[in-house]
Image (cartoon, rainbow, N blue to C red; front, side, top):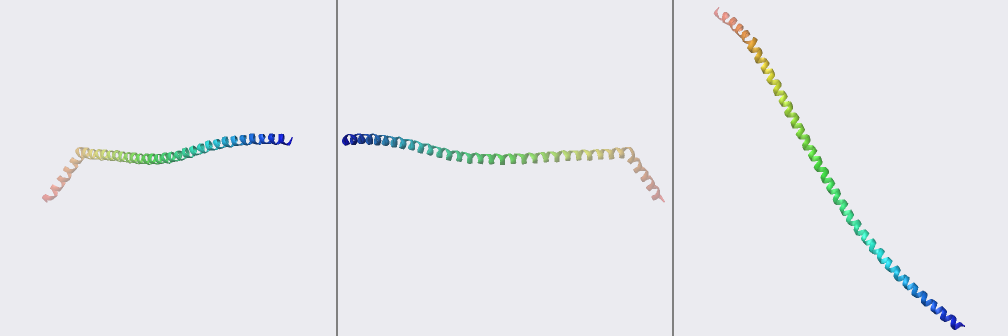
Length: 125
């Protein structure tokens, strides 16, 4: 009986070793697949990191351009306001001169003539 038991044990050990080898091979295949997945994930992560850096650079550039446009727009507005104030000042000056001229035409000529007459009279003495 011991011979029969030995054969049985030997057959069992052979089948178990075959199953263990087969499981080791499937385990190795799964590990390889997982390693490939890890490498793909790392590569994708690296590419995404580069893309993030690129996008941040574009965002910073866009912010700088926006600030510059805002600055230029502010300068244009200030220039426009300066021109408007200058125009208003010119109009005020023109109105002032017109009032003075109108006053001179209506009143000032006669006052100037009266002053001249008074001076002529004094010179004759």
